[in-house]
Length: 243
Image (cartoon, rainbow, N blue to C red):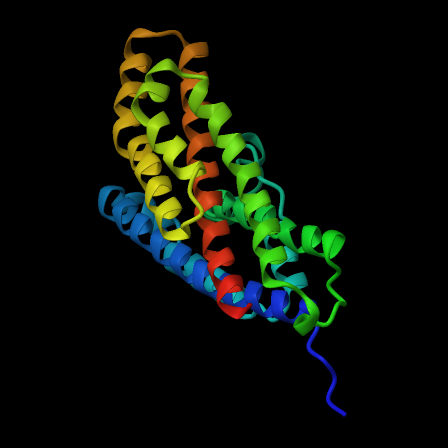
């Protein structure tokens, strides 16, 4: 007698597939960024083996077999600049490179919470064929809304940002079309990555240090949250395709 497939198996397989996809995309993004660094800072490149560090990270990502492997890999604590500077040049190189993946690791760590939610509300040991797919979709949307709320708080804290992107945000949170939500999230992300830095630079020129730090921190937080939304939607779509 064949054992019935459990929800845990479906979710774990979805997460592994999702991580393989998104980690490859992140590696490509970092690879592109490294090309810019290498072309602009040729002397820096001679002291740091960027390609070797990239291959090392690529090997770590490629070795992932289980959700536990993913959690272990992305749970490394973020290092402060002071900590990064400790040790010799090879250690500094390793720390600097590792920090390039901080935003991705944080996003992955947060998105993995959906597995805990599904276990609490439905039960991962439940037979998959006895679960209503709409229950899974509902819980995924509830979790997505929680991430949206974090973004709302950040956007609303700046009057200029609110004026420029809040309408996109409202359209995003009022939709259940994952492709549309992704599109609106990308528009918000583009605003912060391409337009917001100009505003930050202006304030750096005319404002004080405290104001500059607030601007940079707020900017980084929004970029992290929009990245988290992007990661969550990609996992949601994979789960949805399997149910």
